[in-house]
Length: 202
Image (cartoon, rainbow, N blue to C red; front, side):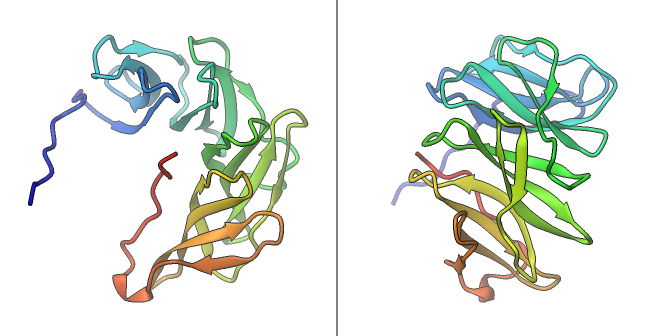
């Protein structure tokens, strides 16, 4: 049996996180803090030619590409809230209005419907999954479970999401129907609290 071989993609002083390939596989967006606050950077597919895309004194996280690779959406403090900008750089524009939540993070852009972005939102003391319509700059809660819902990632049908359903003692990968709100666990509780959903391969 073959084994996995890992190599370092980028390694800079400070934060090195949130890396995501562009839809065409030619570029990678990531968060680096070597120059101060965590900022959004883009490199080629081999981690070379790293170029800074944001410049401000606020923390950024979770960059995600639009389906056509022309834009990036990410979370930025205060809040955080969701912001949109050209992938080549520019002034970020807030898009997470009318969500009813002061915390919006972990965006996932739907390839099936480029107008929709799933995200994690705070509702009271818990976290749930929301869906944002970019054209309307309107977001709404789509999960209403008695547990936390975090780390959403769209399935190819543009209707369902895979996400992490989390309690104080357990963590399960689940699938959410964004139209009905129905959640279905796809992993057993016995795998423990460290289990997390990952980006769906499309």
